[in-house]
Image 1 (cartoon, rainbow, N blue to C red):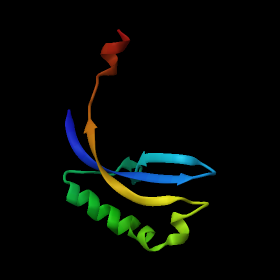
Image 2 (cartoon, rainbow, N blue to C red; image 1 turned 135 degrees about the vertical axis):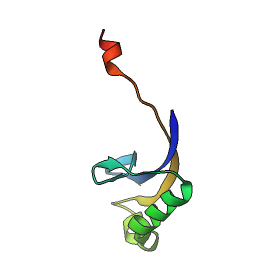
Image 3 (cartoon, rainbow, N blue to C red; image 1 turned 180 degrees about the horizontal axis):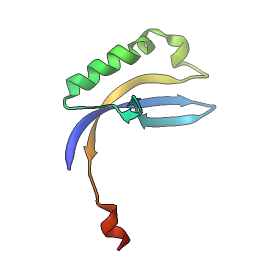
Image 4 (tube, helix red, strand yellow; image 1 turned 180 degrees about the vertical axis):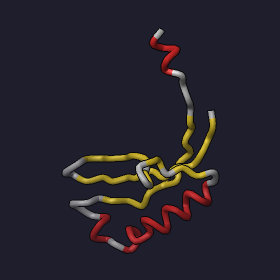
Length: 82
């Protein structure tokens, strides 16, 4: 297993409820070797949310994404099927 850093999207509104998921970049999870790299990615792509009160209140309820530690584990599914 390997630990990397990812960016977690957070939104909380009455329409959709509470939502959290990892952010993707080019159809793959946005994963980084350091927390600093994850924070730089978040600031570059989503920093505008910090200055947009209209996006942070209803109906959107967006929050700034947070850097989170992600554990990557690989499994051989062929072994399970046998």
